[in-house]
Image (cartoon, rainbow, N blue to C red; front, side, top):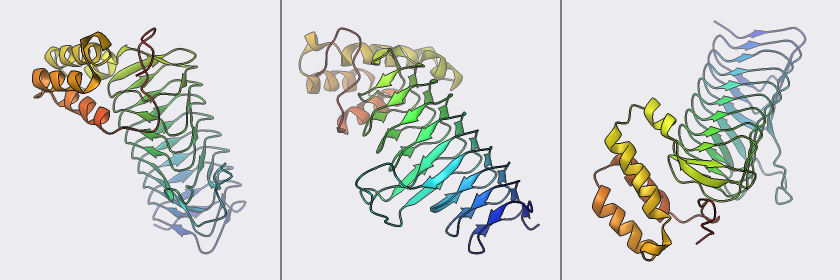
Amino acid sequence: MKATIDPTARVHSDATLGDEVSIGPYCIVGPHVVIGDGCKLIAHVHVTGHTTIGARTSIYPFASLGTPPQSVHYHGEPTKLVIGADCDIREHVTMNIGTSARGETTVGDRCFLMAGSHVAHDCVVGKNVTFAQSATLGGHCEVGDLVFLGGLCAVHQFTRVGESAMIGGVSGVRGDVIPFGLANGDIAHLDGVNVVGMKRRGFDRTWLHAVRTTSRMLFDRRDGALPDRLSKIEAQFGNCEPVQKILAFMRNIGERPLCWPRERGQE
């Protein structure tokens, strides 16, 4: 079945539309846009740039996708925005294409972006990520699968947020958050483990205990240097998959410091 386009919409003749795409009233779709099968642009949606949208994604009024990066380092290069399948993109969401530094902004499958949330240039967002109202990513952020970003939180550019982490509402995140971590506060600090998220994934008590113990050992500077602490964690919990993900995250040093527990300082 061909795409259904409202008479008031403006869809460039060079745009690529999949089967059963629905383009609602007053939408604008640019020439380099690719929209997958079964997508729905409800109304007043603006899609431009070299933007690809995966199948069955729904986009609500006044979302703006594929606009140029908000960066002084961008000079018109034909960079990309790639959005996965089965995403739910609500009102006033904005996403920018990449800069020449990475060339692409990427959002994975089954992400839910609530109203007013923002994905900046060159970000990499995993699968099943939830952005609550007005959650914001600065440029070059990396967000793992199954992360929850609380309402009105802001993540500093180049920051990494590990798999299944949770960021509290109205939090400013300026340090890397370990996988399965829970970060809160005006200037976010690590506030334990995302137990609710782990239980929803079906992790048993043994793995919950391992991740909690790992978090305590990791940030206890009284117990030797960081490489020594990592070795101790590996020896004690080396067979625990979530702990392995934390260790891999720690060994892949990023550009930002770690998000530490309150009153622990930074290492």
